[in-house]
Length: 183
Image (cartoon, helix red, strand yellow):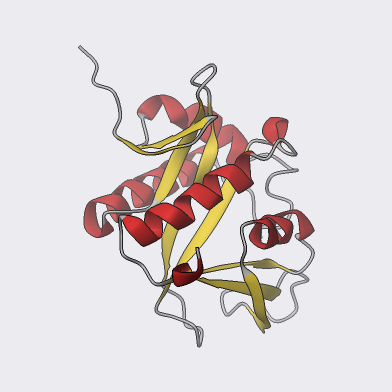
C-alpha cells in the first residue's frame, strides 16, 4: 500500500509536501520549458532534473527543509516547487537561506507562487525558527521580483552572481530580504 507524502504546509488552495517519484515527469517538463526557464542559464535535461530532484531530497534529509513540492488541492496536480534552500555560493550575504519558486506556466498569474511563498515565510518563522530569508533573481525576471514584493520582501541591492560568467546578460541579480520578526 502506498503511503501519502508528508505534508509540511497547507493553504486554502495548495499543499506543500514531500516529493514523490510521480512528480518527476512534470518536473522534467517544467525544467525544460522555454518560458519557465527564460531567466536561467540553461534548461535542464531529464538527467539533470533527476539530479536536482535527488539534491532536493538530500537537503530535506540533512537540513529538515527544502524546496517543497506544490500540489493543487482541487485535483492533487503537482505544479512545481516553492520552498527554502541554503545559499552555498560565495556572496557577501551567505551563509543564508533563500526562498524560491518555480511553477508550471499553466498556473502563472493565479496567485499560487505568492500564496505558497507567504505560507513558507510563516513556516520558516514558526516551525523552523529562522530569522530572515533572502530571494534573488536576474534583473530581467520581473515576474519573480513581483512575487518577492507581494510577500513583503524589501529590495536590498543588486549584485553580480558569482556563478554566472561576467559577459552573460543574466549575471546581474537583484537581492531581496525579509526579517521574519515582521511577519
